[in-house]
Image (cartoon, rainbow, N blue to C red; front, side, top):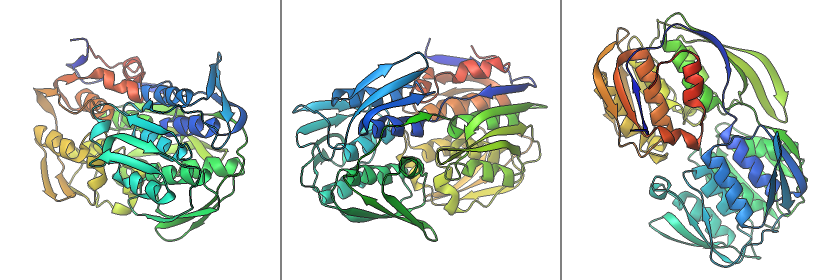
Length: 441
């Protein structure tokens, strides 16, 4: 079948240099924020994946003009509360939880009824987490069991709120921030620490947002209805996409890799901290600052003496999209690796914690689970010889890519379904990995 890949051999030693796909989180935020700026914004190096293209389609459908140029896109912003949404407009977020949750906040000032839909995977995910705070602003939201499809209607009479976000979810936080921008007065969020691209971009644009950092939380205050000026932005590489190549290199024999121009925002680099603590040979060079973000090159060398880790749950939010890969390394580590409070993993594109445990057991790795805590009993001599098929994972792009890395480093013969899942975040994944010498049919 065309939508499957086959791996029969591990990758040979390589020494390479690559660029990975542009940061998906920042790409979507740049589209959404530039749509409510006043005037023309220019976005360079935009990720052209399904999630980002769906973001473009969504804002076009509510009156934003977007022009694609040779090396950038131009977005003609309509200003705050300037969307032109006809009654019963249908917005399709596809597979993107970021887009779906954030567009609800961005559209909170539209007083026509709008329907929000998504694909099969997104329609199984929890939206109660954003419905509750948006209702507090005055938005009218109707949903069956807190899932898509959602019927929502904003209002011209939004009222500011105070909200405690205790899940460490950047999507919830950003949805509230976007609604606060539409709202007169000051909205206050006490937010458990999570990725902070939205706040950094707003601060760079001199939007009136104040952030006070306390122990495990940020206190964020947003002044609503302030003008947002147009901007130019060049999207850096995505640490989540880079992570697959980091682990590929670490688990491969006698290999080296340099990944150029990657966003190494501290709220996103939990995987680097965890893998270094497990003895992973990883270094960051050529650090530079760009519009609030930190960008650098990541140097990786093969590692064969991984050790288990007792991973603090405080780091979970900064590694939430990379735990599948961390578990794969833990399978090759000496000793027991412990991970706690991983309930958010089962609220992603697929129930990733459940899938990860099933995957590791398939490899012959002992895993013990107590609610949302797991122990992985590593085997440094792990080498596979059997046949493995990966299917029924709700077309989760990260499950697919992790399975490819496993097949290329652990041995065995692999048949992995739904290769088109990578279109949501990293369409060039297979072509880039093949350039390093991987034999994938």
